[in-house]
Image (tube, rainbow, N blue to C red; front, side, top):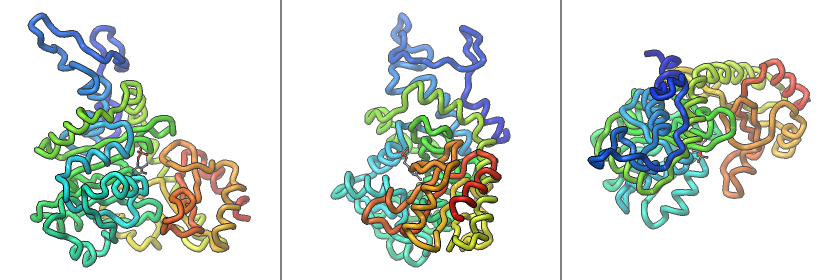
Length: 371
Ligand SMILES: *Cc1c(COP(=O)(O)O)cnc(C)c1O
């Protein structure tokens, strides 16, 4: 089935007892046993599984064309689960512009447990030279945050293949509507569901999707159940609800982002626009090959510098100054401030999550703020 149909039907089950078209929210933490002690519906206790979580996991697996999915209480909980399945001493290779929350997690919580290198994974020579006998995982994130760099997923998979190294792709920026890493050979996909899946800036969640139910996946399920970083039935319900419109929301985000990127690129006060859909993007060709669309995120550099970029933010009226992304409303942030003092992000960089307002209103707002 096509992705629009999957999004609407794979995460919904009609309720046989009430004949409700929309699946009810099952808040019960525990489930009735039969006389012989068995569990006829397969549910025992909600930390292990819950009907709303099962539905959410079903739609997530089908959207990414995977065999199974596991839902978590946040994107960072999903990332943490991956790292917790690794044997102590495993060497992990990460991008130098990895999502700062996960980079901090590794450096703070996994120091002394895992070994890690943060490198330019897009430079084949650099990547190859960092692979050691103990390397067990290469983490990639494409398009990256906030520089919108593109990693060639197939190439990284090729480098890892035959070396017993897993490739995990953080697909949060692209979503399965824009990119399908499992089809390109990745061993696992990770998401912050807080972003486009939720889509309305009102819930937190994370997800992992596997191409096969292998031994590693059993470990991931164990950490999910024993660690307990699971989303509530309410959050699962709202996520499955939001996902029904994901393909159409992404179309709107992509349409607006492309036009805003083209507008900004021509503006005399802008030094550079980073958007994979622009011809000027250094990896535009790779993006064209591996992406189904170029997404709704862009960053740009303001010529006059950091102070001027902050002034632009404050003059905007339709764009809201806030971190995060993927909601229906356009958000803008001075990324360097969000990432803190040790950031490598240029201080004149503004990151935009392009929302679903009318593009004319977004451009008009930018015009007055830049002017
Ligand atoms: C937000 C984000 C995360 C972390 O997800 P949370 O839901 O905030 O825990 C990870 N990766 C990327 C690319 C993100 O944007």
